[in-house]
Length: 301
Ligand code: MG
Image 1 (cartoon, rainbow, N blue to C red):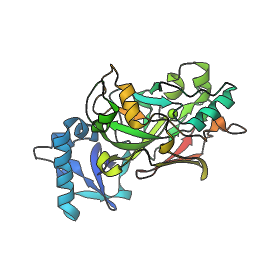
Image 2 (cartoon, protein in one colour):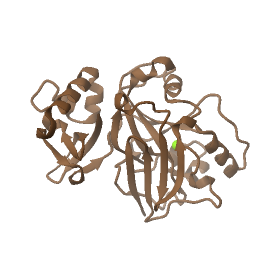
Image 3 (cartoon, helix red, strand yellow):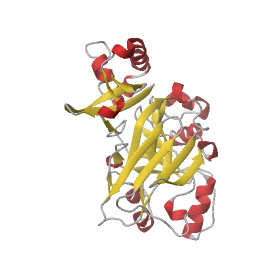
């Protein structure tokens, strides 16, 4: 199933949708009045409601077909699948060796492959829509960079999860761009501030459920600026895989249904290019993960 969060010209309320061909089924309307109505208000509601609700909704969406309430894909406003996560997004730094090399060269440091994952976070207020403008506060930063990443949506609460069981805790996958203010990232030493400016995490356009997505370690990741390919990698090159990340992150730390993980970026970021590049006002940023879809965001000053 491919789930989305949308609103319409007649209502600003964000609803749960499911993509069926060129239509977006209005799951909130479809499930209204039934036993899973509360579980179908938003995507976060559905994730938290658990496996029984996931199955009930999937069965209902698949069985109603063309008679289901819904809209043409082009007729809705698309929001991030989880527009306001309940906590910070957990992010992997330096999870692709070619990105470690380009980062080390840019900072004139030795390239070191981490033996434990580098984990930082982005504020929930960074989350932005898949086709929304990224409004950059130019009084705060002049060095805005791109990072295409596979996002993991946790489906089940747990702690001390062994890698061999980690997929049991995944609801699905999404596309995100870990947009970064490099000047703030370097200046403040800790990553949080440079990673957390408002709107710096465009996400979506859908969450593909784990059963439909298949192996998350065999997916192509691409990032384009004004149509020019800047990043073209594969999740096969992650140093810490999705299951390893969940094992490390959940050691002594509860991860909960609805939590988001950004799994790191391949090489080709602006900071690592010769000469270095930054996003300028008016630039169109496209971020894509195979099997999920494409984000298209314009940089606005
Ligand atoms: Mg990143």
